[in-house]
Length: 520
Image (cartoon, rainbow, N blue to C red; front, side):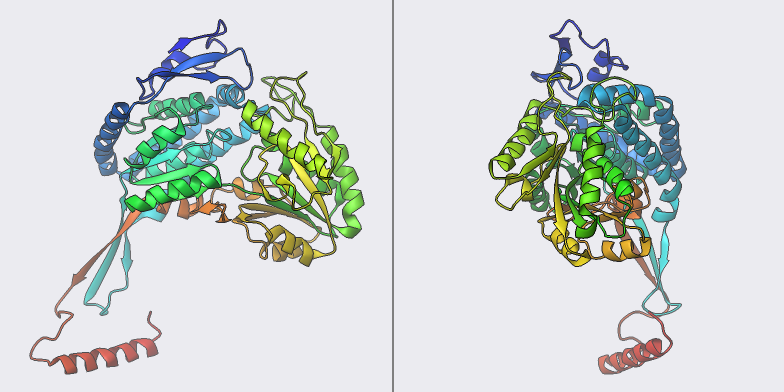
């Protein structure tokens, strides 16, 4: 790795050169630039087809031994990682801020989520993956054993917005199930992924079991998909469709967390101040660059003015800036491209008649990638931000007559990833939540109740994705179920001189008896 800046890698809490040397990459270099410090510019090598082939071969070889180890050995690695992540949380937070421009608290949320995921799968793996005795066809004579077989090599194509968790968290479930993992981090966020894998190796993970490759997604991504047995992808819906088609062509499974236009519903019995504070977290966490961030807020007519006033006031008090501490509540966008996308959507909305209640402009005084948290009203269907995902600190406010209209408008979207419902009555909130077509719905919380509860499955409905991460489902996607049937004494066919007709009649009678006995 060579640097093209006098700042080089000195500010990074890990040895940047050592981390980069762990990449399975010997190809042409590509420029990496910090979102936090524009003067920090580094040239990183990219992965060639030969690099990828070598990494895959080594990982598959290591996986055979890894899968043969006792489950307790794999659990111990995850528990050791849990402690290592907590011990190195400050350094990991620095990396997340340098790479993505995050605020400190946002970075810490991601780090703690990774630790919780490691502990969760270490504790539940035995219960979820244990061999199971099933019901045989003929009681006492047919035995069914079900076991879970690791898929082999799991590929992860990671996003830039949350490069540590759930990206690395997906790999932990795959590891404890007995798989090898190959990770392609986003071009913007390679260092934190390498740091996490470094900690895993220190926790006892075999060196070849989790290679990291690096390069443009449109080149390395398809090559990676051709080499793995399952793929985890987090990114845009458009790219997710391409990924799904390639996986389908190979008949391998995939889980896809894709785009969202996430709604927040404020019911007429909510506390306006409490709901407004929650909406600020929902809309502007990680500068809106969170898959489950709120971009549409529907407020009951009788509460609209009070909520809008409180929400705008609280948005204006957000502290923007960059520092490696907790002074600022919102950081920057990740890249010039993302900033231009946000700016273009706000300009389009303004030109077509939307009003900006607060925000709506760049903040070059804070840094080159800062954009103010922005609240729009009067947004209509012909505006780009009405149905299209912004993925930035922009939210639209709408007045609705009642719960029915709020639910209908929340569901009027191609997406269905996350939703939030605010109410003074949790029972009513859960009743409304059941009618919202999103993979996760949080009552009186922005997204943390589901995202932070690792036992809760997470994923999208409609165009927001396929499959689930977290919970038992997040582990079972990485194994094949194998059934072993053992038949004793009598064959499942005519025998001892029985005619086929007599055999069928006997089976028919047995089926009727089993139904009468209540047996499945």
